[in-house]
Image 1 (cartoon, rainbow, N blue to C red):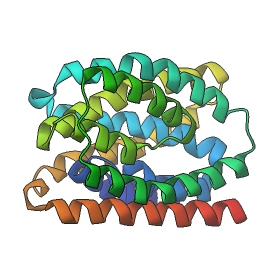
Image 2 (image 1 turned 45 degrees about the vertical axis):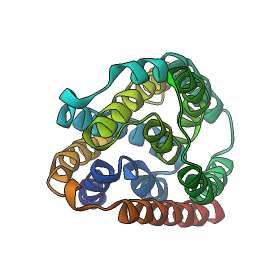
Image 3 (image 1 turned 60 degrees about the vertical axis):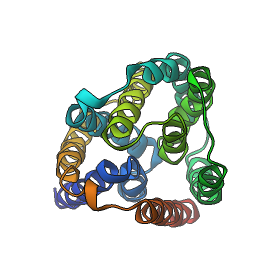
Length: 241
């Protein structure tokens, strides 16, 4: 119970972070979940929590969502997420930890390069991005550092970006959860823990609306980089245990 209380508090803070910058909730929570439960249990728990967290952001920005890029991104992204989830369930847990750590570190320069290049993408590009990022979402859970520049490069900002990115992520996570259910890893305990943590993330998403206006572009980028490096350190420690 004490562990769950600690995770609930961390999830509330992570929800605020995700509600402000559009990503980061999963990357903050995943290392802690892996430490307490191991990757095989942590990833399904975080998938349930991520669904609720994205529901919170969708509800918070429902009127601002642009459904065209959401659909274009999610149609190929859902089957790719299912494939990625199947891959996750067949590889060694320690390999998952190490891959997560490398991925998070690699996202720091890649995100900065995308921002400097000022990529502009069209609707059909969203489908290509959805297919690739969908597989990674199924396999490693959090790909916000990749999806964030994709949706901003499409031209979305503020509430429109936050709501649209969350709606697309919600659809991809639905496919991933269906895969976990079919594999029998969504036990009652996993669902209960995921719902508790997800409720905290959801609450944090609504709290974030009050502080979103005070976050500058420079602070936004710095927050993402800090989250990535912190998550990478956490996963490295887990992989070396």
